[in-house]
Structure formats: structure tokens, C-alpha cells
Image (tube, rainbow, N blue to C red):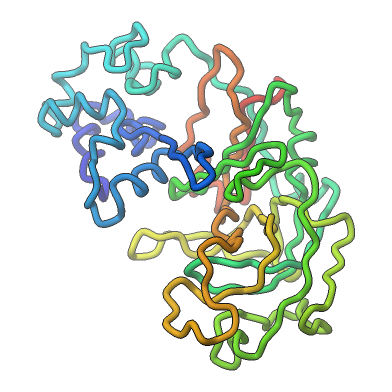
Length: 355
């Protein structure tokens, strides 16, 4: 809602500015929907709000709210409403909203309360990431609406990174966050859902797909301009030593990636300093964008083709290893936001060993 409500909360609790409560997650909840394969797809609060309410605000806003958000809305949606529900226990966890806010725990999430401690975490700098075994892979980045391109990314395999962080046997998956609120879930092991990209194991090898109609330099939609493209022709096999993997990249075509920034329209620009690179589960050529108007050209847009670039989280700053250990709660997500982009850090927390 364009931060319309955050100032109302801060009028009542000015000392909670720049804490985890000063965010959309205070009132909004995540959710899940069933995809075409009848598999549940989990979404964070921002994704869920965009899915149910939409960028244009045509959906049902109540479907995106947690119990605290509902009480706030019903109370009048202003600072007086915040004060009027202070003694309520919106999420039913045995702690009233005032106690939760004082302890900087979410009053609308019964999994977060003043008695829980922050989950184990580990911060990685760029130097620490580069000290881990390096993995380089050349691949197609295929998107639904944005530009398709081939690129060579270098980083560390997520499997390697999680092992270094001390992932627990109880872990089932990871959720990766960008500082603009975007989050993407990845199961640890291969899943039949085409929209779920796994952490452990390799992805299928792919040939190089080229056609001059698709070449951006000739008026097409795929950028073949990287130096790493040289030497390839259509259907050339792409040999990636070690195989294609889900990686946390810190370089693209041998250079640091541009740090992410928020545009004037509140969208994320750039992809660095770290981007999760997701190979295709189902090998496909670079199809036209979904907005293309000429289906007679080669590789017209296919909604069921694998557009894995859309799941390749840009400017990643947080990796949450799920589920959180018993008795723990989330870290303060805002502390690992835009400052982490500037400082080139990333934090891993959740189902990992205590230091």
C-alpha cells in the first residue's frame, strides 16, 4: 500500500522504527496456492499480497492480512486503531499485542512470541564466500517478460554453502530474500513441481540455442553479446565442469554484478552483489517474451516452458533454512536489507548449528 500504514504504526510506537515490526510483515501474511500439478506453492508476505491483491489493488486485501492486520483494519486503520488493539492477543499465542511489540515479536504471528530466541545465524562476507570451492557455469537465463540472455556466472554451490554453514538434518528447504521483500523457496531435494528448483544435485545439461531472429543485435529478444558466448553455434553442447547447479553467484562474465537498487517505481534494478542462479529443470530455447506480438517468429512464447530466471533471486541478502528450530524465531530481517547490499554481506539463519 505504498507504506501508507507504516507511519500510523510508528505514531504509536516511534521507537520501533527500523525494527522488523517496521515492515509489511507486521500486518500481512504469507500463503500458498495449488499450481497446475495440484502442488502447494508457498509464498512470502510480499509475493502473497501481489498474488492475491495485485499491484493494481483489484483483489481482496483481507485475504493478505494476518490476525493483527485484520484487527488494525477493523479498528479504523490509523494510529488510534493501533493503540486500541494493544491489549488484544490478535494471534492467540498467549501474549497481548503490547507485550509482543515491546519484545519486537510479531503480534500477528503465533509462531513468534517474546519467549522465543533468535534462530542461529551466520554472516558471510564476499571474501568468505570466495574462500569456498568455486563453481562456474555458462547457461541460458530465460525469463517470461524480461530479456533472455546467456551468461557465465561464478559463485558457490548452495549445497556447498549450506554445508559450510552447518545445515541440520532436520532442514527441508531454504527461502531466499531480496531487500525489496521478494522471497523464493527452494526444496533441498528434487521436486516434481516444475516451479520448485532444488538445492542438492545437478540440473540437466543443455545445448546452446541460437537463431538470428532471436538475436537482440538483429532486433530479437535474446542477448548473445557476452564474451562467454563466443565459439558457440546452434545446438553446440554446453559443457559445465561439475555440472549445472543452484549457485549463489558473485560474478557475471568475470565481473562483479551491479548492486541492486530500487527504481522510481519501487522495482528492483540490478542483480548484485549476489544472485541465486537457477538452471532450467526442463531444457528450452530462449522464447519470445510474453508481451511479444509476432508468434510467427522462431520460439514464440510458451507459458509452460521453463523460465527459471524468474526464480533466480537478485540481490540476495538472506537465506532462511527451514524449518526454524523449536523455540526460535526469525532474525530481524530489516537489519539484513539494503545495508547488506552495500556491505556485500549475506546471512544464513534457521536450521543450522549454533556457533
